[in-house]
Image 1 (cartoon, rainbow, N blue to C red):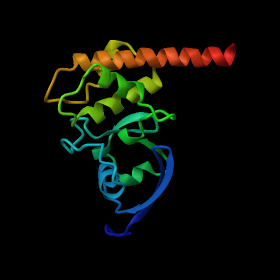
Image 2: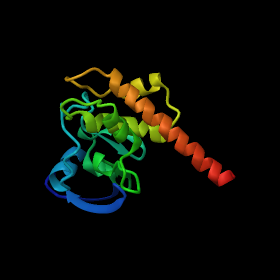
Image 3: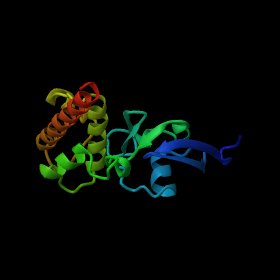
Image 4: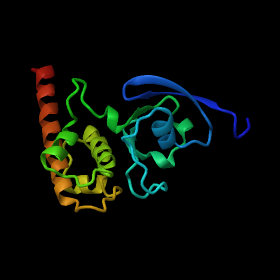
Length: 172
């Protein structure tokens, strides 16, 4: 295969199965933004240092600028556009960030939300130190991180309460 021969990549994107043809050296962020027109994911540094391009791949927060598009073959990818709940309401992290006004210019916000969502989806009982660690790979030039960490902590508490209610319904 030559460097200009396209490959076929099939994966689940925001709950929908998709198949795309792309060049083997294309980055996931380029595929998302340019080919699939999902522009909520931002490119900041392009070298995996700022976290602006964070998406969730198989439950893990990943810098999409550091992943080749072909690496998502058979995987589940969630972007900020797919972060909403099944009923269409905002994810608890998104809602908490809004409620706490924990954003400035908004460029880095999708990356922070996706890093936090990956943590809370895995551990709804996340502590503030765990939250700070989860978002430590995300940079913001506009503001501090404490308001954002507090917003995410509130979202974790809501997610933990929802999980407990769900478990009580199943066992009760």
